[in-house]
Length: 326
Image 1: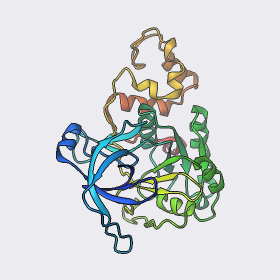
Image 2 (image 1 turned 180 degrees about the horizontal axis):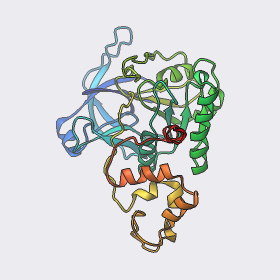
Image 3 (image 1 turned 45 degrees about the vertical axis):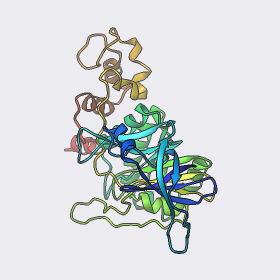
Image 4 (image 1 turned 60 degrees about the vertical axis):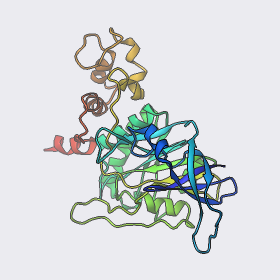
């Protein structure tokens, strides 16, 4: 039998077949060994083969047919991050994604620019199209709107689609639904950026928990504990993922990192050296573009942090602007 993984709860995977029947399956031990560097050999969005052990489908009592996953089909793409607890391993967030949306908040909590850039680079590296959603727009005062406009202008100039949304006023939701129609879309972001509330506003029939912001740390409380995939009434699927406090990047080849910055990829062939790191070499087209203002210095700073394996959130546009006023 074949199906698509719609939920992962530890060792169990919920699989939906073409008729949307749900099957509860585990991965055989010898199959798991083939993916020793990955904490989860099967991810939400995977197309899999499975064999049944029981036939007791009963939706009223939530007793599903159970079985074993025997094979994972070749992935179109996937989004991977470094495992939080096991630094030498990776964790597959989701697979076969048509569009990833990183949900951003300007305050309460603020999404660090370093987090945004690491996420975008990972999407570029694993061939996942990505757009930015500036959420909670209804809570922004005039200054916050100007701040959001700075980020929006920066990322749109690079080529990323950006959208303002509100789960309260429903601003931007019609346009967002048009982008999502007939696609498998992933929503990701820091805890507390309003991701689950936004998903619920897009599809009110979904039973998704909506959390509050911690007053102590000004960070979100996790409401989504496992990645899950939901069918949409307007065709397509939405992947809701747990809020990510830190986005640990999988180590990339030094020579390739600049290729995952679209504004650098356009100019890197003009460098004097083919293996230019764009840091200390002479006649570097990237450094020249930074000096001329064609590449934003904060994007260049993000590049250097990733190049040297620094997963730190350096001051972004808003913080730099505040420092310059002092």
